[in-house]
Image (cartoon, rainbow over all chains, first blue to last red; front, top):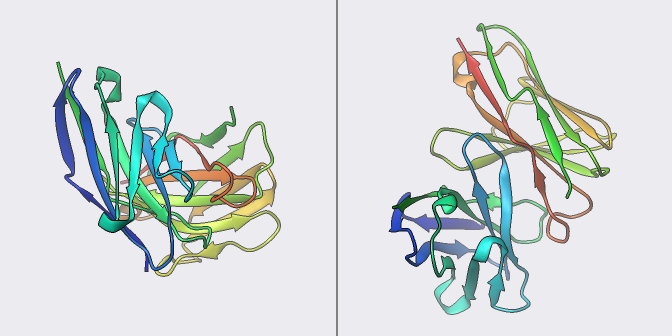
Length: 112
Length: 117
């Protein structure tokens, strides 16, 4: 069975600092991996997706994630945090059965 | 870009009432729509997958008779929570896609917050 684990339900970083949100996955086949962002009382917006092409995936809003098979990880990073990045972030996995399994989410707080 | 509209955004009703939530794809024809439930501070749990013109496929543990899904057209799917009770209070989110979600983007609605008194 496929699953994702997000380490840290809350992460706080200072404005301008590096953002690192951790995600580890479990899948019996090469996975598709996703990062989504959710703002309060809204649906989800896709940040980026890994589909077995390049291991470093660039997404919207300056975010990127690196697929590391040896570590079964797909951590999300952004070099410099903005106040507008404060939101809930979800890592997700799919193993081609047309379903996406979401992690529990990490709430990112940006400190002024 | 593609827009999915979900209505209503917030509903409060008495226990025993049935509530209908609509999910519309505004500028594209969605072959598949998904319904999720999100509890506070938790992840999205897939409830069912809905394809136009066919019966919805429900996830294990989701009561089909409790959560009725109708997907009458390529632009509209509805979720009806029948005889709602306080434990049904949650944030319900729909999404829509054209083709397979691994190949095409999954567009999400803004969700419906359901509060049962």
